[in-house]
Length: 237
Image (cartoon, rainbow, N blue to C red):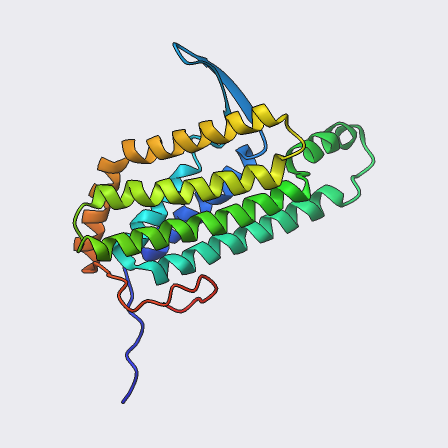
């Protein structure tokens, strides 16, 4: 019996590309900066500068798992992880290449070091936290979908985010900044990041639900992960 060809989808590759784009931009541009805003009633709030953008990658993860299943989301997570590895390697090479001897490069090289010369802790924290948080998010959503027989999408989206973002935020900041930032500031950033990311996904739920409904109709797919191998290190669908 000839094995059937892998199923092809109209939008899966586009979602993968968007996911990787958001992931790279969030980690390269904003992850290492601690920002502060003074808000009414709350007061001064300290948070990571990627706060408004990184949660979008989790929305993509929810959509991928809900529509295409854990296995296909797992492939996207590994694609994102590979992109992070390459970006870290490229940043290291570019920063450490000897600069040309001219006035422009004499002024530019220190800025390049400051922006892209991330410490090994930030790089390691980003990669490990991303992988652990993304797989936790996808696993919880897939299991909740089976447990609820496909009902209560809002509960799956929020529930998986509560777990995934807790893992991601805690792992990243502890690896990257424990012992560098004061403990009270580190704890404040972790709590702020976690609460905002969870609230952000809840606020975005109506849009997420519309995208999920559209993709299920357009792709003719509504995957349930019954019998799925949840080993995060496998790349098989």
